[in-house]
Length: 241
Ligand SMILES: Nc1ncnc2c1ncn2[C@@H]1O[C@H](COP(=O)(O)OP(=O)(O)O)[C@@H](O)[C@H]1O
Ligand SMILES: [Mg+2]
Image (cartoon, rainbow, N blue to C red; front, top):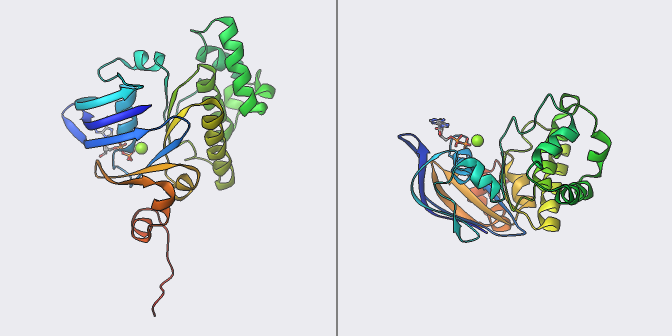
């Protein structure tokens, strides 16, 4: 679905990412973890057309999307959900959903909406509420629903649970996984809670200082004591004392 080959990217002349190769498969959740400042957001932005790409390939279903404008990449089925500001605060929930589907025919919009309601039935009850009325978690649910409405193939999510209480964060991640599976959406997720992200994801990349330091099945990464203690905040009990 998404293939990134030997990507070098940054902002203007500030190079942040070095030789990144990454794959995100359809129907799977791929997660990017790593310390603050390691380039996770920049990697999502590079795919979305919002960073400077110096070299390398970015392929969506084998079509090159590198060098396209952000709105062109969006119209190819890529949804970029930044950490904040992914919904329109002063509009109602229904207006937000309509904005997401403004390029669709009535029929397509209704179909997208019913798919979103299937994953998130609660959205139906909020249609006439203004977005400022929603909690942080509900806004994330709306942002994901908007991506579903507009028939997203690849969802790039930057720390969707950053501002949420742990229990709610876990629920949202489960829903993201469910949406991916049920609707055939490829999910590429950056998560600050690496442990939780690894638990719900299929494949993981660890970024350190702009490079891929490790990649593999999420389970394997979780079970790798060295990685886990260095980067994931997992404390292992000392066995020899
Ligand atoms: N617009 C920008 N211009 C220049 N440097 C930036 C910009 N945005 C982020 N950076 C730098 O890029 C590096 C990686 O940032 P980022 O991709 O946000 O990391 P992460 O998401 O892993 O915390 C940081 O050193 C940060 O200061
Ligand atoms: Mg970030």
